[in-house]
Image (tube, rainbow, N blue to C red; front, top):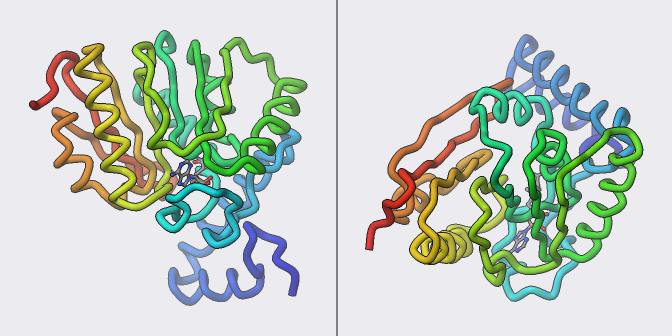
Length: 236
Ligand SMILES: C[S@@+](CC[C@H](N)C(=O)[O-])C[C@H]1O[C@@H](n2cnc3c(N)ncnc32)[C@H](O)[C@@H]1O
């Protein structure tokens, strides 16, 4: 059977969901999946199809540390942005931005500057195509920058205050990104937050000494953790 839905065999996905979650939760999961599929349809984009880690096209030395390409579910993220009441003044950065769904949602929310970084040029290209398509349907005022780079090489800027991760890479790569973030905060003390979708390496975030607190959110079955600092507090 062709891989049509979320890059998976739809029949097998349906059977596994029914078996592992039971009929009631399975209906809920399928409803959310259908809503998510319609996001691309309404915006003229293609962000949904998953890519397994071995099929990510990159020559980065961190390829073996990557998880996969998959898009954050749109509705829970929009709801989270509004629930947090995030300031639109600072810059927003998606570490591992893939086909760009999160950067489009962040631009639509109205962050002054939105940056997406991904080590796969074909994914950056798809993100640029998606941005053009999105702009034809929605008026965006944000400056949107798509950077083809490994995240560990990205120089974090002083005006960047909201960061995003969707389970993109190993604890090792995450620790390097947090080290860069810490150096940026020492050079330019400021309040920041990191939104971590599906926070697999919560302990790495906690151990980094960058944050003074965190809050957990479960929205539409999607788990996010938001890590924050107090502005000028970075442990030496
Ligand atoms: C799970 S996807 C998340 C995509 C997007 N942030 C979202 O939430 O819709 C993770 C992305 O991280 C990228 N990635 C993984 N390791 C990376 C690295 N070291 N540097 C840059 N991008 C990386 C992958 O190419 C993939 O597109």
